[in-house]
Length: 162
Image (cartoon, rainbow, N blue to C red; front, side, top):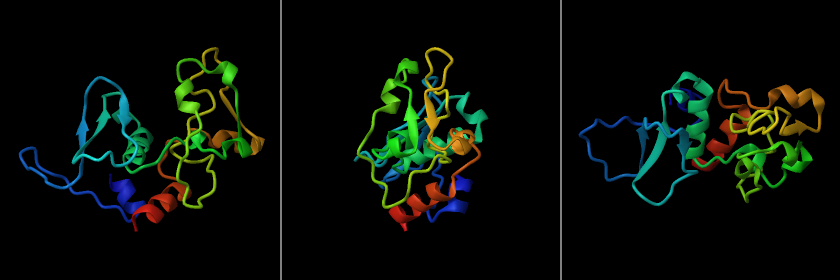
C-alpha cells in the first residue's frame, strides 16, 4: 500500500479489527482461494481483496491486486491491445477469460506493455508456448513485470482519483 501511496495521490487508512467503518473500504482477507479483487468499487461498503499466502511472497502481485481494487483491468484485456500484442488463443487453456477484450476506461493513457496489470508471455499457457507476443520484439521482456506500478499505471490512477 505504501508503494501505491508513494506513486499516486491515493491514500489508505488502516482500520483496527474492531473499528467499524461507514465508509467504503477494502477488506483484506487471506483465504486459500487465490489472489483476487473485484475491479473497482462494487457498490457496497466492504470490498474484499484476497491475498492467500502465495500472493504475499511477490510484491508485484500485491500491487497488481490493489490495482484491481482501484479499478484497473488486465492490460491485455484492453480493446486496443491488438495494436501492441498478438494473443495466441491456441496456446491458452483455462485462463481464456483473462484474455477477453473488455470496454476498459483508459482515460487517454496509451497501452502499456510494462504495466503491473499485464500478464507475462506464458500466462495461462496450456502447452508451454507463449500466449502473448509483443508486436515490437524489443518490448517482449516487459510483459508481466511485477516490480511495481509503471509510470502509466500511476498516471491512470492519478487521472481517476486526483
